[in-house]
Length: 238
Image (cartoon, rainbow, N blue to C red; front, side, top):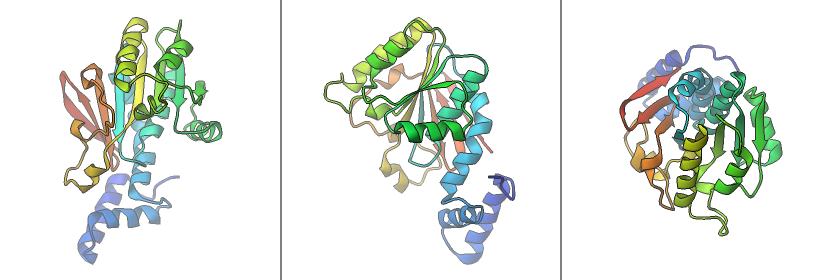
């Protein structure tokens, strides 16, 4: 859906609406989004932000990287992961989408909506580190998205999440794969007066050694912030 105005001008419209009608900015943003045909500002922002950002982000990743795409629900983390896979497939990188969140029909619909041609879909209920490694075994330089990290150990028969992530890091280093995990931000962030989530806002019901994560991309209200342990954070948006 094409916006009637660039997103920065829509934001300006919302700020003016908020000031003139004395309503909170987040409600003004949602009202502007509905006038553009979206349920909420976060949905509008997700649709607008992910495609232009995908190529830039993919170029920032290196073989062997473990990457988190972290956001609250409906802020575009899964769609961004699909755009990254689409970009990878377009340059002939093996691209795989492992999802425990979507069934086959919904995942196929999501792939089609992002024009993610050439991306291999896996909706197995057995997705875990061993399953991912088995599927990608022998494939050099794959780009895979796992949707989402906190579900990898939902089955009691699967190893703890920390152990799975450690094994996947070794696999990525050995094969040059880039493994991209969507990750949830704790709902408590919604009550905080900060423009972007931070590492401490990650929802981690089971512990994970975040030291093995190479890059974290936070998404919120149409903005992306890429965090790298060895580099300053950078922001992008529409």
